[in-house]
Length: 488
Image (cartoon, rainbow, N blue to C red; front, side, top):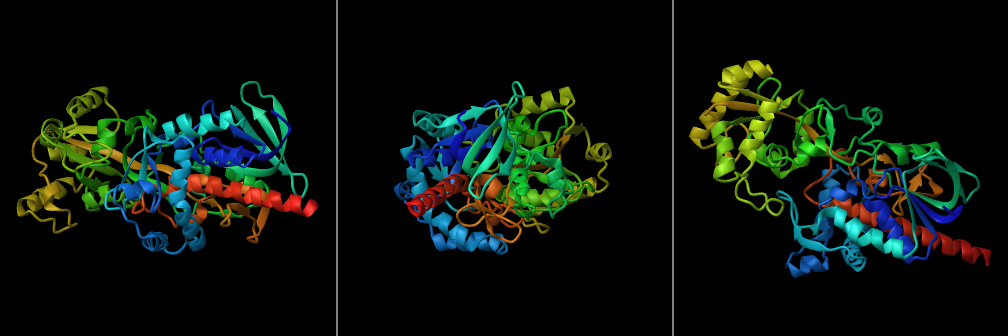
């Protein structure tokens, strides 16, 4: 590493690489620091990004009302979101798609999620390809330095304009000092830091199951706080509902299974809580998984109830609810075998019994028999008088063996912790900008949300990673031009 840079970016995910590409095009001497062995972080798993009025939407004859998007997000956040930041982001979102394409990123289509708007610009090959076949190769050609397995352990403000960063190499514990005029934090939030999770304003009843890269431990937040940044917790975790719960298996691995990824989170099966009571229209939960996640977190336990008839139906005949564009097959061919394997392996999330009474005893849910009987009665009446689930998704639970699949609340990232202005500059305790300090992506998204991520506008968080990365560099470039002008 050299010793002095115009910009140092901490974190090599989607936001960090977006900032690095913009920095490369702006001619800024830039260093990207990544504490992991590999780059991409949670950005590797991103499906796509938000935009309104893009060229891709126009090709698909999709028309998006930008004012509607703005109102949707402001209402969903109960006006905790920053109006001006959202307006700026929405205005520039279409150009961000063209910018990504210009830098080697390929898209497959524009889609919606559940009942949401058609704003989701899906990557070919997920975020992994967008980063590793587009953004990363581009900045390497441009000479941007990327260092992996190094951590920005501490940062000091050594003058009104410069930061000194103590960088630790995890391979040999050697240290090095780096100087920069501008520091960008892009470390992915704090979803993997249980201590910080407990400090947020909202207490979770059902433990969050992180479905990310595992590296989001609040490093950027702690650096910013050490420099006087304001703590700004709203409690936002990007919850996306039911995920298999097993202390012995990383959550993201179970997410890749048919049972975890296709059935309990995406099919409107019967859900009950620790008492054995229904608590939500399961179809609405599938359509709006942020609501699904909130509902799960208000229960002590949640179980998805299946019978053999339903498992066989999903395996051999048809899925219940269409899952385009993410799953295009009409059945789930490996489901039955997968569930049998889970039973044989005695995975802790799966419970099986030959009767509902026995299942009720196994999972200790005193109202389960009553709930299943009521549910089957509603199926016969062809109307869900209790929660309003559409009748086409109501399938009786009456053919043993019976299964109770315990699920927790999956979450992808956090969206709070630091407060920034509309140039992504980090603000101090008095709301004043800390000169030269920027936060992007999940580190700087606190002003974008209330307590919940709104999937009615799908792709908005990943799109913000791109927007905020570029936004910070554009602000830095303007400030550097101003400094040069003043010096002359």
